[in-house]
View (cartoon, rainbow, N blue to C red):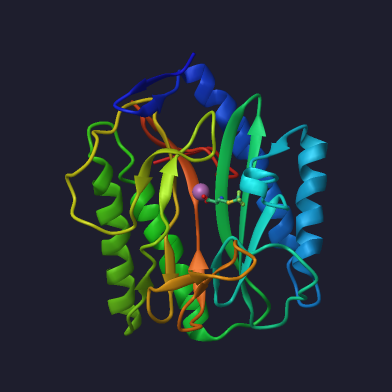
Length: 265
Ligand code: MF3
Ligand code: CO
């Protein structure tokens, strides 16, 4: 059995190995969807690719049926931030789409998201995606034994601010949503903010697994939920971007469980 310390589930090495299998399913499925993403493809098409991947790899969905969620994929286009429900919307040149996907293998979850640029996009959209991905990796690098939880939050924020300065603009850092612990459930303690002071919160221990997921916008950070009760959009209709990985904290450093290759930072 996995046990908990200070409310955060601790996994054995064997259990993390199973989480890596779930993470690989997630990575391969995200890759398949990213390769299929082009003008004319609908978000429902991408969801059905993901369903095929799950059945081929013998895994199940973390999302389908979660609080009644009706799909295996969250597909969030342009001003949609997260939790977009796949449907008949066809992608067009210049769109940005975040693909967020979770899989279960033998009861253990993996959760990751990436953003795909559809054809040629504007320079500011490309920069937004680069900045969001960079802030994710800055956070992952802090998922180390002995660090405090908010060292991750702080690193994500600092990276976002540094990219904004380098890009000559301000990015909105979405505050209403954040990362989370993950293991025998998709969403577990702790909640992980994408900003804040370092050195706060629980001390990170080997065997913890966290999903880190920064969300940045080209405008303000405020968001709201549509009438479908899922889709989160920016209040100012600005373009939003989302990247996520599940990472294990190990004595050998951060292990990115949802990377395609075996990534240890
Ligand atoms: N994967 C999302 C997250 O990163 C949650 C998806 S909500 C669901 O936390 F309902 F689609 F499952
Ligand atoms: Co998540």
